[in-house]
Amino acid sequence: MKNLLTRSKGPGLDERLQALQTVVDIGRDRLDASAIDPARSVLDRASERMGLGAELTVVALAGATGSGKSSLFNALSGADLSQVGVRRPTTGTAHAVAWGETSSESLLDWLNVPRRHRATDPELDGLVLLDLPDHDSTEAAHRLEVDRLTQLVDVFVWVLDPQKYADAALHEGYLRPLATHAAVTLVVLNQVDRLTEEERRRCVTDVGRLVEADGLRGVRVMSTSARTGEGLVELRAAIAERVAEERAAAQRLSADLDAVSERLTAYCGARSKDLSGGERARLVHALGTAAGVEIVSTAVAKAHRRDAALATGWPFTRWLRRLRPDPLARLHLRRDSGGGRTSLPAATPLQRAQVENATRRVATEAAASLPHPWPGLVRARAASSTEPLLDDLDRAVGQTDLGEERRPLWWTVVGGLQSLLATVALIGFLWLTVLFALEWFQVPRPPTPEVEEIPWPTLLLFGGLLAGFLLSALSGVVARFGASARKRRAEKHLKRAVGEVAEARVIRPLEEELIAYASLCDAVRQLRPA
View 1: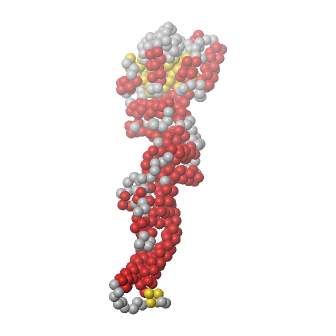
View 2 (view 1 turned 180 degrees about the vertical axis):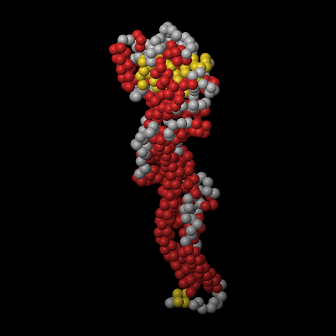
């Protein structure tokens, strides 16, 4: 490509080729082969052709059997080099004549034209003139050769005869597909010596009308007679002018780019829309449901109440709490669980369907205004993320901070107070036990202090138990408020984690596809002729 860019001529051609390279890079796995293959072929031909000498001009005489193109070829070359005849097929292989000192062998090797001749004429230095096989030949190989070479030559000279100039095979098979190549096309009505002046004028006018209808606007229509030599000077001068300009190769390349641009324009339309907040929210909600956000946040609240009861509950009944399963540990969501996969239930078929539907809706909205094949590409990109999406959601939930490390200070205070009250109750119980033992063995015992006629041991025992029970109940109420707050925080963190997965696995890939669309369409706009 570097060689091409340093040799190519014509304003904006380098930029157009760079744009085409961008189109090929982006569209290689996205666009239909009918669009991307011609673009790739143009790039390949451009690099090869311009590297073989932009100063050389390859002119091809093409036409039907009996049109007299071989006679014109011989007349222009000044020698009988190509067989002349009216029977099919006549010209079976392309003939070439090269003028000038510039080496054209490598170019003819690339064209794969084995029959070569040399000629000298300063006005035609740099010309490589080809006589192509008949495009309407009964031999399929001849038609294939014409098709191959028309993809490679720089200038077309279509030789028509008065009887078959309106042949559909010529107009539908060649002239219309090459409608963007008017700048490198000449049309010659040959054998005009067989016509009267009025017939000649009418035929030339009619040929011009047909060529115009084929899309080749502004193409020069010339009249010649290889037998009498009429018009040959003008034809030779027209060809010499193209050779002298040394722009035919670049003009042909520019025409190819025009044709590719027309084909690619169908793949670009309106600009893509930004995803709405509503669709994003529905996607995150569906992913959150499938990821078990509600299950986890509920487990967080239950785990908070359990942990609070273990820290602040009545010391004599705390062991009962330990018999109950830990909601977070059961889901493999504790920090000490290793941070691997959770034990959350697998997404149900309904939840999977909701995820797929939400993903599809986001993709559909993103690509709603785009032409074929972009909506399908965007939807396929979204659909391909469903399975890894569920795994990523599970990992995201397992790695989300659920707030278990933030142990409330009041738990420690209340826990210490509960231990103190339990100690008081235990002292009262032991004191009563000692008094009971002394009474049992009828051992004299010292007087027991009282408060409002209530013995101290009794007051310590029942006061400690009652205060501990009331403090435990009050702590449970406060813990419920804390559990609700922690549940809300966990939901917020989980939804943020789910949103990040949605962004990474769904939104960003869709946006990458939309960016690819925008980049390709920008390149197509740069590819269009000025």
